[in-house]
Image (cartoon, rainbow, N blue to C red):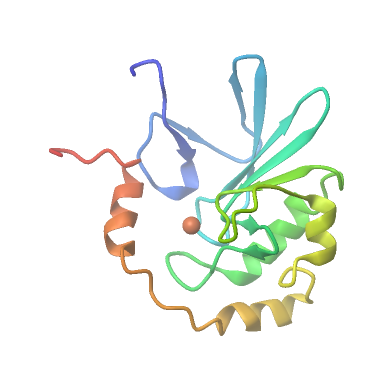
Length: 161
Ligand SMILES: [Fe+2]
């Protein structure tokens, strides 16, 4: 659809129609997203804030998951940076802001800033404990990542496909 544009953070280094930075606003319909840079899982990670008349939402991607967070042991992962950005850019939002993560392994869809501030088992730890935990998760290397990352860098559109 020619009227649909792909958007990604400038910091990702990926191709897209539009590149955005921290603080940029994205208008669509009668709504507006505010982009906040929240690198740590990858350099390009952003959280998008949406304020409606009745509620606030934070679309956190893989930066902040429900009772968890994105791993920081591959691509440009940086546990200390992820911790700082979650605390400074997401946990400072009003407590009743809904947290909508990029995915969830247990079919949960939504949490709130207050719930994650209180109950996230990783991000309630002191920063040094968090970094130690994230550096020692011992997770396997994702099987498809060497295919998926080059695809992501061109927003899934491969030349000659
Ligand atoms: Fe991810």
